[in-house]
Image (cartoon, rainbow, N blue to C red; front, side):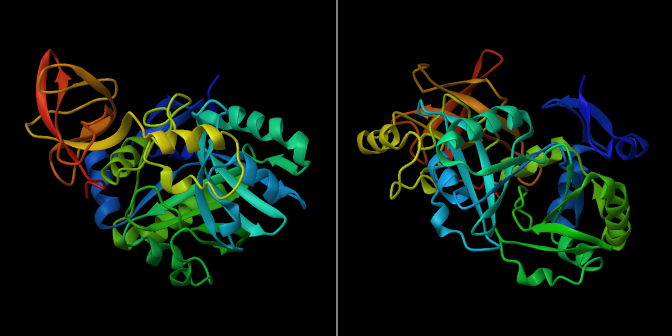
Length: 360
């Protein structure tokens, strides 16, 4: 039985196409992927992302636990700041990627991927025996709405006294939105078009969705589904767990060396330090198709001789560039920027080029 978010009835009434995703029935699209994509790039879109998981880690040892089980350095956080990080699995792979929000020295708020809530929770508990922090899984009690796009700030500002222009990227505040107090207002968007995410209790979901929809009307706000969320994040080269990163990919292979800090002790530190020293044999890269074709997850990547050198993890037709773009793990030395690679699409080797991300 798939779970439903507090906004399920709202999506159905808006004519959304609902699909099973990560154990939830979620809206994949409303008016259409391209229209929703451009709304976020040029105006403003609203997403229900309540399937994501939320944990609280509290107490004097909260930071020590997080420091040990995640790759990034939690010491770099100050109150009101967020940090992108990942959970190494003990074998050089990734349990999940996540965001850590520091509320104060003894209280952290963690946002994890919907498909990994149970797996992540077990990982937190497994190591917490050593640290004894207070853990709370608030995933079923909390909802999350993302308001994304150049007009997102103006839309949300109508409903809150919190000065949104004073919340830099990867920072957050607790504030009141449309009379609902203790809302976490966060600037950690996954679309690359600016905007905010708001976290609050399930019972306020419909009220806030309606208020935001009304506030954004003059700017052309429309509801957006998971399909446009995927094309938006892919144009920015952001990883999607289960596609581009998983338990078999190391943070270094995935281009996440920037969130892997060796100035502290953490799970897999030795393995990853050795991998860094020896160099990686494959790497996640962005590529653009050189002919009209759409790359898809699982397509084989070959070199000019036809030797298999990798696999596509994410791919789409970029709405902004009108060309096929994707992410793929590619073997050395073919992962250098500018390398010519080929994607096998229906028995044909279609040329592509390794490029720097983001694509747009």
